[in-house]
Length: 261
Image 1 (tube, one colour):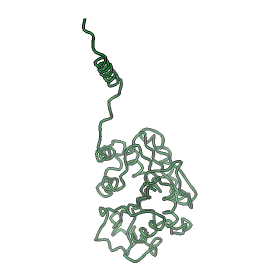
Image 2 (cartoon, helix red, strand yellow; image 1 turned 120 degrees about the vertical axis):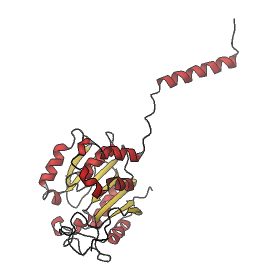
Image 3 (cartoon, helix red, strand yellow; image 1 turned 45 degrees about the vertical axis):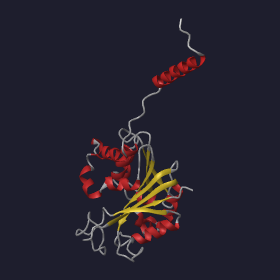
Image 4 (cartoon, one colour; image 1 turned 60 degrees about the vertical axis):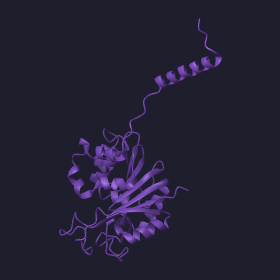
């Protein structure tokens, strides 16, 4: 009878162990590009009410700028009707989390939108969404987040209805809320160059260079920008609600990163 030599017996045992291990190991989750994840989130039937806005608001480009991925945590500051919250929910998926945060001064003026978002949050397909109302001078999440996102509201922190906490205060709070290496995205209506904070209450605009200076002063590194919302036809010296430009203002999208160390 054939008797394998000791070294052959060892090799045979090792081979059998590897086969058994392979049989018990579940297959790896198929690799999916982040662009595919974003495209799937944008095409979701649950956000059919928003899709007519996509051509104007360029969500794929701006999510690409942020680098938001599956399983991450994102803070959507002043979510309005929930347009970005619904996209984020689809992108981060069931193992991710979306914190939709309202400063109280803003929430008091948007009670209907707040209630609508609260009614939807935590239920399919928005089970990963949590709505928070916080003191206007504070900004936080229950855990460190990968992305803090604010769209068209950075300028408001300088205005009377918010109590003028100052947008520099917001940049500092966003820095604290992020994980090391996390990203702060600021999208807002552009004021004319050199106007600084002068137009935040009257025109609802802010100079992008002021945003950049405040974010850098808060500790961020500048990490990029996107021109997809720019409109050269906007004179930048009229209110954003003027019928001549409403819905087509020239906006900037800036990306800042909290240093990893």
